[in-house]
Amino acid sequence: MGLPTGYSLVSSVALAVLTLAAMQLFRDELGVEGRRAILGGFIGSWFFIFVLTAVGNLGTLMFGEGHYTKLFPEVIVCLLASMLVSGLVHRVSATTCLLFSLGALYFINKISSSVYSLPSKGSGVKSMPGKGKAYR
Image 1 (cartoon, one colour):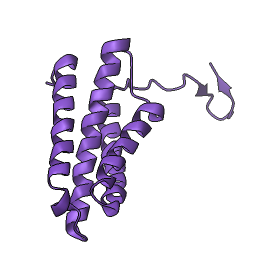
Image 2 (cartoon, rainbow, N blue to C red):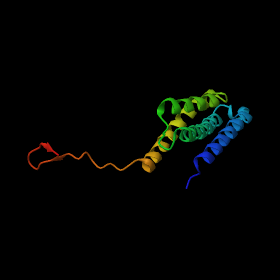
Image 3 (cartoon, rainbow, N blue to C red):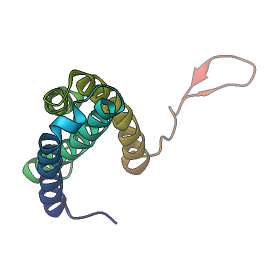
Image 4 (spheres, one colour):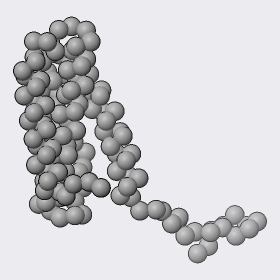
């Protein structure tokens, strides 16, 4: 069971701010070439997840339960913000943040479609045996 929308909004904003602060606090350690720069991108993808959750919850609170987060502008803006935050650490972190965030977005979409989508009933068009023509 998840949190109610208001609590989820507050907690995701708090986690996004904490992630941003931690990335800036450890900028010198994460900005080193190699695995630490990749770690900076991974942490930046968590920032993306938190910000995307906050934006989705804010939209739900403002526009009602039928609101859903779209690719443009919500997802693109959150992705650019997370890449900017990761780019403040290192350029490699921004690139790996893009890759990790796209992977996370794939799995978020997969989970969301399995939870919130309605089962399809088919098209309702049947074909007659042996005729190849469709009828209703």
